[in-house]
Length: 447
Image (cartoon, rainbow, N blue to C red; front, top):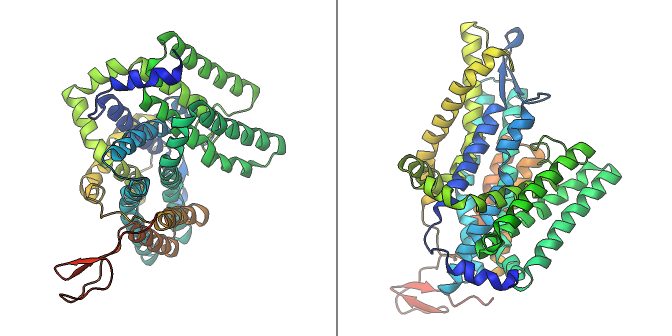
């Protein structure tokens, strides 16, 4: 039996409801991102002036921590699994690719437009209050850094219909070409010494990992023998170790994300193999009441938590600096014993504050999307506008001006991804298409 023919039998056994193991892993990935970024927050007040630094720079502990908390490869695999499952179900209901992509645009960009708008206003308040311009600029820069995920994930999800068709026709060839392209970019960057070439892998690395999620959705990976999956996991880890020793990749897996490297592909393979090997115990664990409550809280708020955790961390860092300056009490030296002793309390505060903000802000993410456009051109423009907004903030940084421009681009993306609002006409008047209760219903848009 070939891998291709084994897939239907395996996927036929897969329940059509939500996969609790997948939901738990997705929620755990979001938690891992928040914890990792919270650990990087360093605040000091040397000579009576606030200083905000990356606490992990030049430290030994970021390497083992990155091995545990570098979860973005697995997140993209899970994203591919969920997107393939959702798109196939929408096709069964008679929906099309344009509606699917338009829905993804709204799901991702609606919470983003609010977060970016609020951050822009807060930066304006800080500048007006007399906060030094370099600190305001640093806050905007730190907020922008995690937004790479929003832009890349939007593009990856927009390509799901096309790449899923390629997967269904030639699964191994499609993922092989993406992985080979990622490896080629890595090789070109190493040989030329031009690190900027690596940013081409913002496409190939993450698309290859999403494509791996399609195999997971098919049941193809679960259909492999346990021995094969163990060999895949061990081989991926061995490949990572060899790349560290040879100097191809940094042992700090966080460093391998900017720009993305093929080390992330190996991480994704290892995590995916381990997930399928442990899927049944993970599913049983997910059914426990406390674990289920955690999953149910994060799942509908995943994008909201991701978007808001950095503003929350920046706000907590600012409050810490103000407290140190106003009381005159010394803050724990970054990386020192007192600093480590305070990390559990700091992490608990960061998680609680992020959850509190998410409870309120998630109403936007949970709102039902408007009717999607039926125009391929409009949905393409929506994706381009959304990606451009994120790229602007990443390249220039978040300022009051760039936040305003980004909000305008995101608003435009959301508008053109929706079905145009019909114009009101008088009763009995006909302009085109049909009309109901005096409201024109536009004629169908040709693909």
